[in-house]
Amino acid sequence: MGSDADDGTKHYTIGDNLRHKGFYLDGIDELSRALHLQESALGAKDVAVAKTHYSLGLAFRASKEYKQGMQHLIKAAEIYEAADKSKYEQQIKNCKLNLARIHHSYGVDLQRTGNYDSSIVEHRKAVAIREAVLGRSHLETARSYYVMGCALSDRGDFDEALGDLRRALRIRLMVFGKDHLDTLEVVDNIGTVLYARGGLTADGIADYKAKVVSSLEFENAGDICCRKQEFDKGLVKYRKGLRLEEKCLGELHPTTVDIYLRMADAFGELGDVEASLIEYKCAITIYERMLGKFHVKMANIYTKLAGVLMEKGEYEGALSFYCKAYGIYDATLGLHDDTKQALMNVKLAAEKDRGAKSSMDILAKVEAEFKKRHPEMAGDDSLDRDDDDGDETEEKEGEDKKKDGKKKKKKKKEGAAKKKAEKSEEEFDII
Image (cartoon, rainbow, N blue to C red; front, side, top):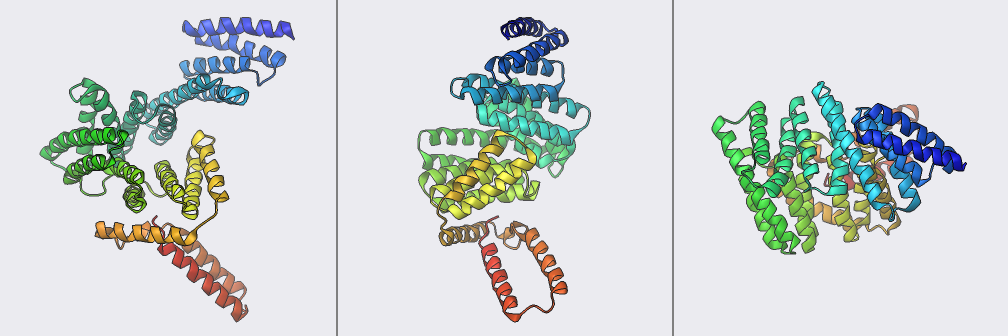
């Protein structure tokens, strides 16, 4: 037993040194031997085994064996978390960051081969990890936004691409300033996407490129105000930025979704739940029209919106949005930290006492105010979240009627009453 552990340590040392020197295949061979010996001597859940998994993950990433690299990094993180999450916090963070780098590199390679759909999936996974670990203002996160925008543009999704390029520009503008080459690179790429998208003249594209920089300066200034707890001043800055971009691309354009979300957060901090939900409604409408209802970005908004409702004791509404978020995360990200957290949120909301009437009242007010602000959306049936479910329900009821035509009148009345109640709930749905 002791001999196997010692031999495992020797193979690990040799393999890790080979990896550092760029001899990745030889390093993988030594590290694989170390892993086998360590698991036999120490068990599969020992932290020494986690260390070897981590080194193997990096070696496989460097040799572009991306899927094997992911498996080892995930395993390393799981062992560290099971051993002592607080003690090995830095090791866990390193595992996650390198997992994001693998997703990033894999996405770039797929993009170069023209496999844009798979590339975008990998970039989204990288974004999710980097946002969670580093935050939304870190340069690594900006790098993910940038390559995501490029991949979306290559696929022809120009509006969504503009949104991600704008996020990358916000961070580079904040870190480097507007005259830095890295900042100017994003601005130029935004112009290229606008040209490919069509709908604007050369002067219009030049005008937007100037206005988006000014808008982001207002947005960053608003963020500073909000960090100082000066939310009213922050909202003024956000509105100025929003007006600038709306002049070029119109209302409810994907590039403005981040401003709506920041305004929603600011209103939430001020305790104005109704105003906060209206801004969330604007963001949801943008993403629904552009991406559909089952996109990971929708899940992010559902989670934030549910958090606002939870703070105000609107548990039934919060539970509904947490469930939606979990379903999307599970389908798009799989076994991911966001998926795990979403499931915990669902359980937490389900344990709370539900106040259905108050939830429905506030959502009804939000729906009315949103349609007042954006009257062109008043007749848009796509905003009703249960349209598809309703169609399926009606089809099923039609089949049941054919099979069971001789049901009692009492049951028919009960069914009609139930359907009426469901319809009443749908009218209050802000999705």
